[in-house]
Image 1: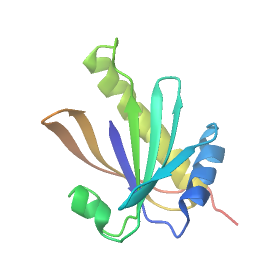
Image 2 (image 1 turned 180 degrees about the vertical axis):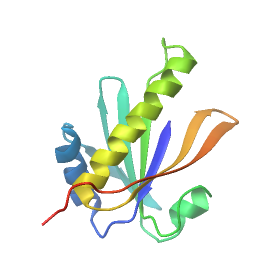
Image 3 (image 1 turned 45 degrees about the horizontal axis):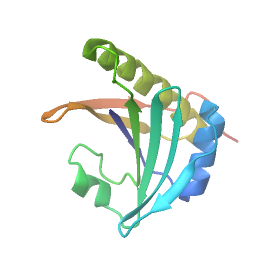
Length: 137
């Protein structure tokens, strides 16, 4: 799983609509609980999960690698039921770069790739920042 984060003054619906348009994704399904709301869509073995907690600071509380101030967490999960771990790690890193840059361009904001979760007990902190390459009007 690749973990990205961003700070944006958007509703969850607005964020997911921009992500959908920027990445050519189908409609997200939405749900919520007491601390957060989220949108979820799965395409070709990849799950895109966008979480927007209700209170600021919650993402950093849940995950110390989240940059301060981010209010959206994006998890990209590559299905690994039949694929070797080395391939999944490489493919998910390429996926994180592709999604991170597309999202930065769609939002006109920095997108942070802050962590890769490999398996229970094994995560790799990341410090990649994707900057918008396209100026938004």
